[in-house]
Each structure stands twice: as structure tokens, then as C-alpha cells.
Image (cartoon, rainbow, N blue to C red; front, side, top):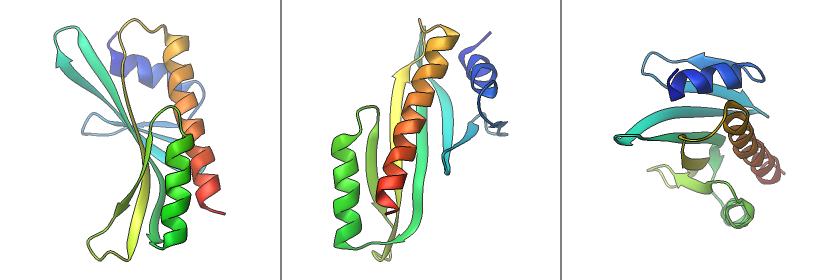
Length: 129
């Protein structure tokens, strides 16, 4: 069983997982939506690329920038960033995390992904205040 199939099976036990036509998985967690992809870097090296949308279409203010910066410094698993849109008035907040999938048991794989998603949900709650 490949890494993508393992992710689908193990996460499907605890979350809603949608297999997208482009090969990505969409997972909903704590009011957020995440996209997971398996990317082959080299022979025998597959990475899981996780992008979690924490907030979208926020009006960008100094307060929002400060809240995102605070969460970026507190988040251990992943990077929280404000992605400002070209109009410079609105933006989205995302968490990105990449990790190698080889060598992880199904339980470890599920636990790691759920820890990242929980951290993103916590960051979303802090930014949403």
C-alpha cells in the first residue's frame, strides 16, 4: 500500500477525507480545511505536503498581522503565514508542513497529521478572537 493510500485509510478512521481528482486529499478539522499531497522527491523519498487553510478573506490590519506573527512563533509543527492578496486589503492565513512519510507506522502517521491539524485549529481560534 502506497503512502497516499495509507493516509486515506488511517485518516479516514478519525476524520472526513475526500480524495480529489488531482491526487490530493482534503481533510476537515476544527473549522479548517487541509490539503495533503504525496510528493516523490527521489527514489525511496516521499514527502507529505500539508497545507491547512486557517482563515480566508480577512481584512489585513496591523492587529491581524500581529496575531498571525504570534501564532507563527508559537506553532511547532508547521509554518503559519499570512498570504496577502494583490489588493493588499485582504488575505488568507495558512499553515504549511512537509515531512517524509517513510518509516512511519500507520498510527504514527495519523498522530503526526492530527497533531499538525490540531495546531492549525488552535492557531485559527487565536486569530479569530
